[in-house]
Length: 300
Image (cartoon, rainbow, N blue to C red; front, side):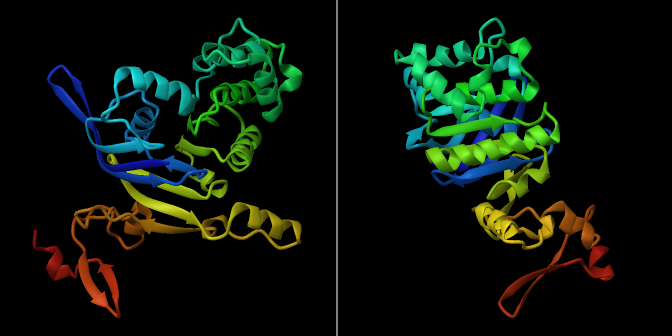
């Protein structure tokens, strides 16, 4: 559904150039529920803006549902943003018009497409558990209810991909869990591809794959050992909850030039956090990285 190969995004301000994405590679399967994490400035929000058609990529390749976002015309880009992707923002003011009711907010994008709006709006509000609040305006909804209304709006025109930028950043942990469960339900019931950008690594417990971005590149991936549904079934059968740190397998991502970014916690564990060399050896079919010997470390 999403394919990024050697994706580059450069912002230009006066005489200054900022390279936000530096040859990023990312492939997302149709129907996948995944998260993208990274520190502030890592490039994760830039990636979401490119996938959402809000920013044009500078170089590389990026396709969504077979649509080439590097070569797309302005007219087709408008159609792409209306029909292929839905966007959920952290700031509810960007999702909702305050003087409209929840139902009217959901009806608006459907109206712009010229479809029957009322039945579709009610269907979506029911799907996100907000049908009973359909006549309430923004000021009458809680933060979690506003975010669920925003999700309904994003789904109004039946997009193939749902992009969410810090969707749980403005709600408490209980509501965050409800919103993440809603994303999972929508992904499975509608076959929707959901990409969530967040700074919260605990989100990994709710999704099947987590991609970490550092310095504009994918640095590592966390892939669930068992499906989330399988873990819930085991808990229902009386099994004890496992250690969250052991629920996923972590992989470093190797780029086209053979380079990889080793997760910082691994470097810290072997005392390599602020050092710039490692010894490389092949042992029994494995590539082994170890800190340099003292005499090696003196050579710069």
